[in-house]
Picture (cartoon, one colour):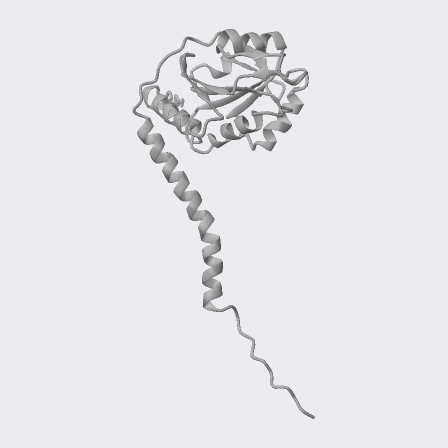
Amino acid sequence: MNVAPAVARSGPSLRAIAWYTTLILIPVLTAAFLFWVRQAQVARSARRTILTFGSVPQFQLTNQDGQPFGSAQLNGKIWIVDFIFSTCPGPCPMISSRMSELQRPLENSDVHLVSVTVDPEKDTPEVLRGYAEKLHARPGRWDFLTGPKATIYDLSRSGFKLPVSEDSDQPGVPAHSTRAVLVDRRGTIRGYYDVTAPDAVTKLLADTSQLLREQPAPKAVVTR
């Protein structure tokens, strides 16, 4: 009886291992490079003079946990606010995604993120809580607010000088601004940023970093 010679089996070749390693490293190195480039752009842009655009009026709404949230909770903080709604078929997903991008570079600061719905009838605290979870919003650092429509619309128009309307090209879909607003520790508006622009996050981070240097967080009082 003829017996076929056994075929020696060996592990992956060095070339294959090198190829797989390269495939894994490329996206990691690319992400690291892009992060470094953004940080360098932020550092260069941080020398710009930050203007002032008036003060934000006192307000109180309700956050995604059903708790009162407004000026009292933001007092003494640097914060960034935008206006969105959870069922938005237009720019809101991009706006919220860009806001989410701010979380990592600002994680070691006390900067607070705020998103206010312009469709409060649908965006209840429970709905906004689900929306926040999808964005991996960090508890205590990013609040999603709802409340009476008249209060929200007046806050957008009179408080932040941002347009908002129930009338748009699509019936039942509110029209609102795509700009985020930077507010300093004194409640003064320091900048407007069209979040749909490619360089919006870079400019916003640069100005926020500048404000953090101008207005450092107060040191915690240690009691014994």
